[in-house]
Picture 1 (spheres, rainbow, N blue to C red):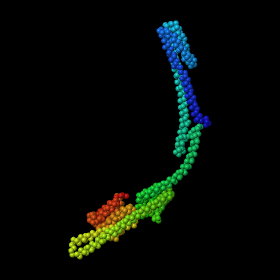
Picture 2 (picture 1 turned 45 degrees about the vertical axis):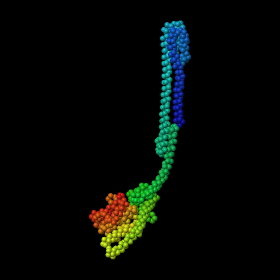
Picture 3 (picture 1 turned 90 degrees about the vertical axis):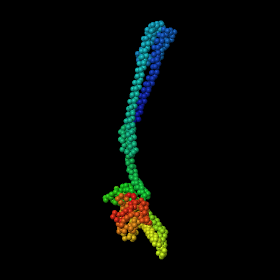
Length: 565
């Protein structure tokens, strides 16, 4: 059955028919061309007979010597092989043959007139003879035209047949070959992109295309089973590798963040947000001990889910706790363990770094204090002793003038104040800080000054404990200590409050408030530099220092940081 319906056989049959028809047209055309070979000569020959007939009349009348030659020429023309072949042509109409024979007989009569020199008779019968020649020529022309029309119609007919067969052949190719092959091509494209449910193929045709579609469909079904099995295995491996790669990428990014920037609540929140998104957590909370303002919470805790947690500890130091809840029952413990270790190390090294910075600054300040004590303090002490000896010497001298004593006393007072300021500066440089913590540092400053006065002093710190770096904290410490000392010396206050908070504009603000007599003219006396130094330190901090009178009484010193939270 497959051989009978073979597309190859049908294509060969159609092509053979087309070749046969084309050969037939070619053969007919060749035959027609051969038959037309003498048509032009025949027309020319018969046409020349009319001229010759009139030439004979001329020769009879004016050139009798040429008459025989002209007669012979006309006789040869009429009896030429071209005209005689008309009698042997099968398809030539009988009327043409009859006309040719009649024309030949009339020429015999016309020859008698010429031989007998019957000019008038020749002239009388010449029009009829020429008319017969014209009729003969027209018959030949009509015959040739019909023959040409027959050839054209035959060629057109065969061409129409060939065009019909070719059209049917093209339709057959499109229907039986091209269209099914396009479906197979589309199906192969769909299979190539993994779409095994391809367009339906013509698998019921009893030919090569149907067999090809059937085999292709079977192959596709087998490939689909293999592909689905392989795809499942690949997906499982890919999901595991993707999860591991995502976790490693997340850990690397978090590590880069910790290594490139100083730790802050914003940095910790950025890191925790990456962990939260990467591990598909529903709740994540970082709790850091002794630093409440650094505690961060993401998502909402679900009481129905298991709350997992791990301590942030390193070198037997417990820094905090990390809590989390996952969308799955148990999250990737290895990733979370690595996150906990990374957070613990980052916090640990941050604290160590802060403490080292404080220690370096304090050590530097201690060196400066020792240098001042061993140099300037010793000189001032020596000057005090020498000034005391000078006063005693002047007091014993009867020649000492009162103005001299006044100058000596002023010099002594200035020397005492300079020595006192130097001692205060040495005390400031020698101030020790036990912990890199703003609240603890402020309390240490206040506690160091309590023995000098009976004024009640209070510290209220609501700023983040690590909101300032060590250098900033030292400058803040010195500004606050100078402000408290000024209040102790001049305010006659009963209470001094140190307040660190975020003001209404979202700025860090530190206040030193007292309920004393206030400052009438906020201008520093000549020879005193405390306020100027406070302003210089505030400028170094990138902050603004304001000294204002209280709303009812007392003085308020404001240190406002320009950066907003």
